[in-house]
Image 1: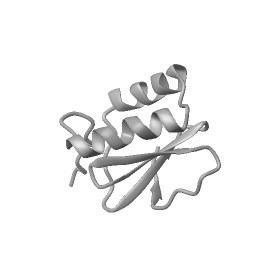
Image 2: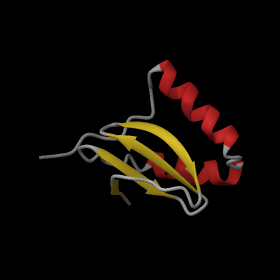
Image 3: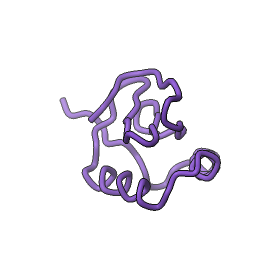
Length: 83
């Protein structure tokens, strides 16, 4: 059974606005966003429930196929870590 892909297109407007606000608030650099973009292109699979991807300088958190928020380095993420 294949897991669904994490969705980055056609996100609900509120989710998209929240992600953009957190990127700005956490001062995520363009270089760091390029790392995220590269990962997104790999079409990562979405585990059931909460998950997070640690990029070193920031953490992307989500639930199921939706990314939900961006944390700064050192902030506590919960859920299953993914590669």
